[in-house]
Figure (cartoon, rainbow, N blue to C red):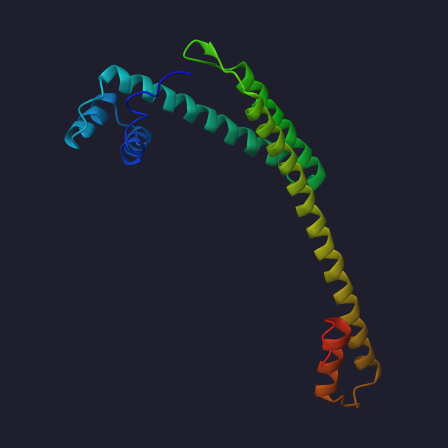
Amino acid sequence: MARPSKIDRLPGEFREAIGRLREQGHTIDEILAHLRSLGVDTISRTGLGEHVQKLDAIGERIRQSRAMARELVERYGEAGEDRLARLNIELLHDLVFRLQTAVVDGEPVQLSTLDAQRLSATLRNAQTSARADIDLARAKKVWADEQKKKLAAVEAEIEAAGPDAKPDPAAVLKRIREDVYGIFT
């Protein structure tokens, strides 16, 4: 594995400043001048240029991913949760494939057995989490529908008693608590 660059060995604040300045559209020379003003003089213009190229490539990949996500939301926005979960799994498979075929510093990226196991666990966890979210949303909807029906039944009984009948508010509230919400006092 390649040795970390001088920029990679800088404290996080400096790396964040480089990324922030590049994102704001500053040139390599402007970023280098800013680093020099902060007392960082171990970075060469070439090294900074290579780092900025990597940042630009990552930024482009992020923009492509966001564009793809927007397109997918427009295309499948109202699709079922199961379909979207499968789509996320396919996107993760694509990411793994691109990682396996990537080349860094002229050498292909190699995944260790541990890395492959972690990716597999991440994929499994993503699928399990998506399924749990779907199941919880369905359960909440079923519960809410049941509560609406129970409340409608109580309201119908009150209306059936007629306009002249004055129900006891305390009794009505007690019945709603018990029948609709299951709270027994």
